[in-house]
Structures are given as C-alpha cells and as structure tokens.
Length: 293
Image (cartoon, rainbow, N blue to C red; front, side, top):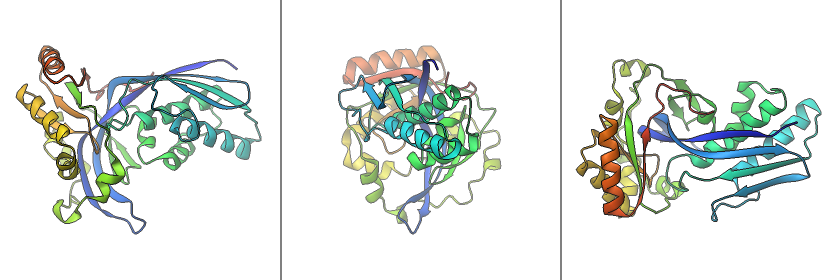
C-alpha cells in the first residue's frame, strides 16, 4: 500500500450568526463557509507501528493532542470494528502553512484530509456519510472540509448545504500574529446582543454576490475585537486598502478583505506586509472550484 499526498485548504466564514445555545453548552450557528487557496500539505504512508505525526510547525504537537493524530486513530479503530482489518501503523508528515488559532480551520482541514486519504488508500471502506460521522466526532468544522466547495452551515456547524453558483473573488488575509481561543470567545459572547437570524434561509440568498454575504456580519466580532485590539486594527488596515468587504473569519484572529480585481489584492497585500509586519496571504476564494487535490 503506497504513499498518499494531499493539500488541505483554509476556509473563511463569509458570515457567521449565532442563533442560540443548546442545553449541553454548544452554540448554534448559521454561517457560509468557503474554502480558500491557502494550503497545508500532508503526506501519509501506512507502515511501522502506531501513529506518528511530524509537523513543520514547532508549536503543533505530534501526539494524541493533534487533530491529525486523532483522525488517524478514529479511522483505525472504526476500520477494525467495522471490517476486521487491522491498521498497525501510520506515518504522517504535515507541512503547516495555515496559521494556528486564526479562525481559518487549518487543524480541521488537516483532520478531514487524513480521513479522505486513509479511506482512499484502503479502497473506500466507508461511505461519505460514515466519514462525516467520524469528522463530527473530531470537531464541528471538520465535516465541512469533506466537501468540495462553499456550504451553508447550521446547527453547531455540522448541518451542511452546498452552495453552488457563487462567483469567486480575490482576497487578502491578514493574520496579526495572535492566537484566539474559540472557547474563550464563545464563553464571553452575550447572546442578547446578537440578532437572531432564524429567518435566514437558503433561498433568501438567491442573487447574492460574495460581498453581500459578508455584510450579514460575524457575531463573534463583538467579543474578539474588544479582547484582541490587533484584530480590530487588522480590520481597519484592510478597509484602508479599499476592500469591498472586510470580515473576521470564525472567532479570529485572521481578517480577510475581498477585492474586485487580482491586481488590487496584490497591491494591498504588498502595502499591508510592508506597513504592518504581520503575515499576509493574497489568493482567492474557492467558490467555484474543488477545494482539495
């Protein structure tokens, strides 16, 4: 059985509304998630004993704390339980390009990539529905990365409706070198200050342009922008460069701006890199392309 390689894309939340809270403490959301052409790179090879993860990022652990490790483990256990096949060892090499704690879903994307690679290597023993169940056990964002494009997410993020026909736009992502705790943001969110968007339904989005979604807002900004002033400054910096829409992704700290033309995005990226000293990515939304590969 051979080696497998895969690209795992980042994502941005074009809008994010908090609709309520479940009795178990998980918040209910409605969001439009879209992959971006900023990738982590993974290489996976069965063999040896145990799960071994080597990562290029010094702050990303290689043990069972890593979502990639957990993805390999849940696949290995399910494979044994459902098919009787034994998977003794898995070696995974992860080249980490997507920032950690940025709201860009890098860890979730890496975990989904491992599930897809292992399923392909083993002759597709699991249906997509079963892979989604494994993914959800790893985290609410992981099932999204099993899809090939933008999705409207509901529930805790696991109820996914593919959204087709969106026209992509160039974007600039600005990462202000601070890691945001998603749990801390939700803990400090005042639901009374969010507008309940229960009437947001898929058909209301007919004819929307990409930047129209961004104008629906991100309820988590109410917490993150106050607690992390660098994120507020990143928003202002992108607005000064003439982005047609600026929004924080997820719980932050990354902020993205959409631009009308590639040249505008590239120019803004050069200026922001020079002026802020923060990490800048210039690319595009994968609104009309398969996300992985």
